[in-house]
Length: 149
Image (cartoon, rainbow, N blue to C red):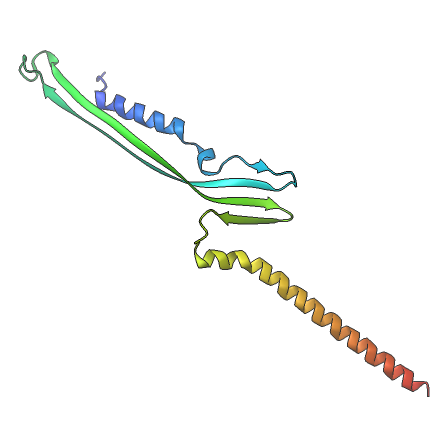
């Protein structure tokens, strides 16, 4: 069975450390419930980078390949960046995404406003229909009043 190269150990250790640091709760945080029943969920962006490298050197005292006396030098490094992006607010029959950065994309703001606009249009339509029905009812009652004469 072939012996494992030292670089494999470095890579395994680096990957295990990164896996232990980051899980799904790093991106979508634990929900927090406010006193009024609204649930707030933090959303973050995670950036990750790492590098592993190494080299085999022959010993100064031994010829390369003699007694398997090659020396190994290597290293590993990594970094993680976690940036808060938004908060998802769930409550009062709606879900809203509240961005941390107020300079969000105009398209995102328009998408957030669409449900409100639809509700306003529905209210206006209902109001218009109710006024129209009231006018018809008033006109019918006036017509019936004149028919008695």
